[in-house]
Length: 543
Image (cartoon, rainbow, N blue to C red; front, side, top):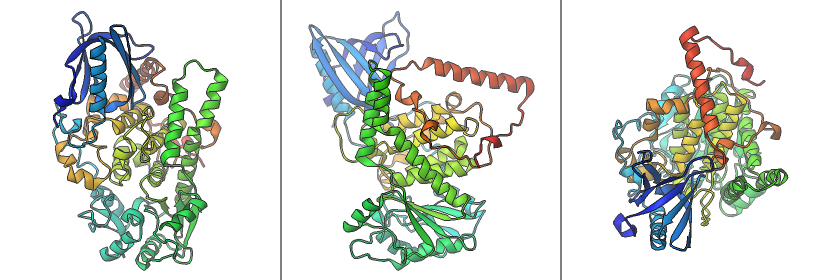
């Protein structure tokens, strides 16, 4: 199929309204296979306005007289209005946008055509391989090894080719454990906590079923985890489902680890919403944020009823439980829900941010995203197919990654000196997860990326974000390395609405950007005049 077949009109005269505080932009509107472009007239600014069509979440059209209006609601939560001359041109442009923005083919998406100046294909894809993190683990302990049993993705299509497993467990045992776990997701190492000698693992649910099946190799694997930790270590299984949901899953082939089969491990249920309930919460929040006419009482009621901040609270509380079990109780922790690709990754990645100072650096955070979300098999293509405006509601969509980013934003607000990256980094990750010229968030797992040759035919987002002109927008000018764990408060009074994201379409961005630039200037001037001075950030750490 050629893109030209879906483009019904070449160009039209239009006026673009981008927000309440931005002046309208008038010029010639054009459509390409991947972009909507508006070129201002010769008297206006020479800059070309571009919108990646993949960013369009929903489209509405109205015609009156000899003109029409198209309202584009975007996946990045911005709302754009196009006033177009000519009824037929309006309808043709709307149909073209609808067709081009809904193409599902991965290999015809824009990242496979994007060739920016200054970047080379292959750059930055090698930054965060599993082998890199394994070398860090191997310097601390000899109890783990790097297994390539999944080299051809036959054990688990959603795992990378290489995973870190107990040294005492051979590859044949891993294969049998994989057959006993949902989606083949046998327990693998997520994080080694050197101060306590404990580990954080992730997996899919065990397939015990109504017959309460067992797998000796799976039991041996978790036994080996405890044997490789500090003497006397015990284990905690954090199940992100309610006891009722886990019991129901057992009746359909899933289940939980039986206490008698896994001595030394205790199970804790910390239910976290995923799937449709989480998506509906996101939709209701965005609807509330877009209503500019409501009273303050109604706004607060809608904010509470959407339950988004409740999801943030429950997620942070569960991540603190996992981190506390490791650092303060000296326990190894295994996290899983059902499939192990959503709430599981939420908890393992946030627990690392709480415990690991390296994960709070710019490079470490990028590695965490790559290792715990992209390589760990979060299905970005399914979960981020639509944002909050689409009328389509496939059951696979859910803003799980956005919930993670919101929790990280809460961490940054409570510990403003401890994260090397700022809000700009989190906003960029949200935008690129839903629509991006880079290939980093394409597909649902590593197997699909290999089949589509994503790593050799597209550019990495990390390469784009590493450009000097981007760094100033992404870094935190107040950052001071903090070697301690940071313990966030998940109490309702400690949590805030992420205004920089959820109100970005209704609130002018300039004041926050100007303030950010002023902070950078102050820090830069101070470094020039006085030099960097050490700052004790230990006061940020909780008990």
